[in-house]
Length: 167
Image 1 (spheres, helix red, strand yellow):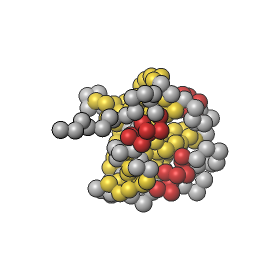
Image 2: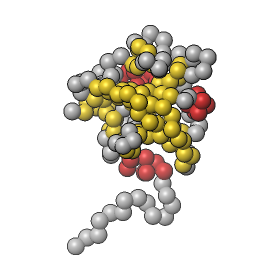
Image 3: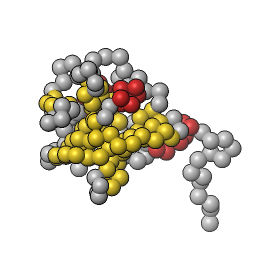
Image 4: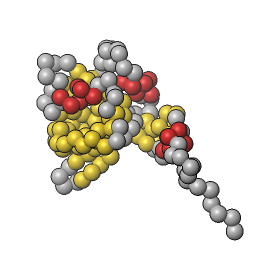
């Protein structure tokens, strides 16, 4: 019987290999949006969204410390996690690029608390910022879900470096 191949190179940890291994796990695609003090809007594409707890209702997402919008989300006392629908890959790409007005010509409404809710999403979770934890090269944001809604569309996913439809 032959031994299974190693899960990762053993001589020295290979970050590119690690990234490729992570890409084998299909994830959903979300955009986190926030209305900041002074009325400015912030938004960023993420695929690191998870439920934490049902009681109380908590979710988490993470953002690289080096992200151009990190300072914005450190200021945000509330935000919305918008779960993207199958046809929203271009929107995901738009919010992944730094240096442009990500909200220009993008359809959204304001929640009762003034947070931006993107049009056409599968679900959205309006959150009050609860905690933030630095871990490695990212910060983990935990939000208390105050309101949520969903729509019966197919979700946008990301797998092996490509956008896919999730059932």
